Length: 262
Image (tube, rainbow, N blue to C red):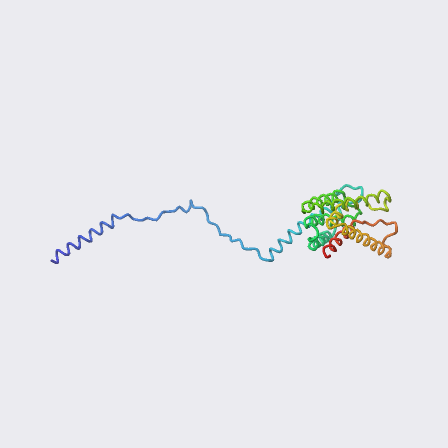
């Protein structure tokens, strides 16, 4: 009995061995390292910190503010000289400060005038003020750009009657200034002032005719006070012709602010 059982056990073990040898063997796939693409270090882009975000916003703002400075440097030349023949060298900050101040006023007048029309006007008014103070000139290419842009953006404002009133106000005030030039010569307003009035009076006229009157009164009073102060300080003479463009811009902003506060 023992011998028979041992033979059966040996046969069973031999059969299991044949099954194991006949089973397919798994061989891992070989990968040629030379053919695989190189794997470099993984770069992880970190999120911008609040300080970096502010720095980026400031740089973008400065790049935008560089446009008015370039406009001033091109057009602030003596009368009769070609553009960019003797560019004016300004300390950094004057033009930019004017642009920021004018745009900041737009935060308060947005309720009475379309904000995009005012912003367009402010971006042209700031260089015009600096150029007029520097060389007593209001270049046509700047005043016309301001007027055309303001009228176009006001037209998109949605009120047809207000746009017609702003158009009539700009033409009326500009016509009065031009008429004073024809009748009084140098004692009247310059033609540059008349062309600047196209956009200034248009913004005031969008609000209403009383706002046009208030804005002009502020401009006249401010100009008179400045002239009296300069005369008292003996900085100018009676025959000195002061630029009126800055006072016209000031009257426009003050008139809009008073209308918004009413």
